[in-house]
Length: 164
Image (tube, rainbow, N blue to C red; front, side, top):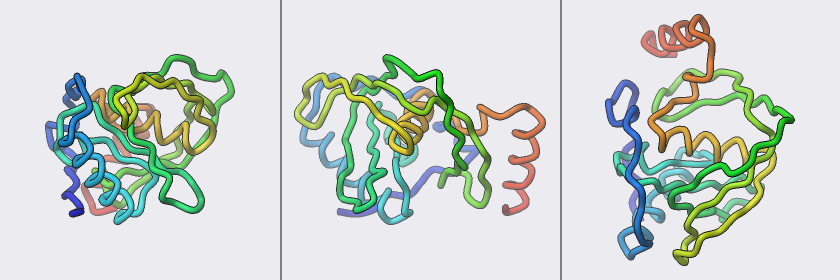
């Protein structure tokens, strides 16, 4: 399947919350397949549909070592988050050339519609949890740099405008 172009900051769609997905259809599966191909081409460990201009609450995550384990999620929400933090150097293809250290919960429990259209609850730890939370932020119209202090965010965006 084809890879899709990634929206670049400051595209206004990156600030818009995505629409809920009512049911999993053939179109949903086609979008997920394109998202996985796009994620693998980056390469990355996750992608939200918003990043390719599809304004639906769809995400894929694959933080496996061997790859090919992509999890397809619709309407993912965090039910529980650990109090134990995990720092991770975050970047996004929407804002190439820059990254920042972000602290998020080390583990989360998510609820989402899976590829079969069934409601699933699953625990994620480490990079899987970090990536899933990053994708949910995109679906909510947030970027990873929104989690930085104003000073650090402004420095990061200045650096990005200068080309990294």
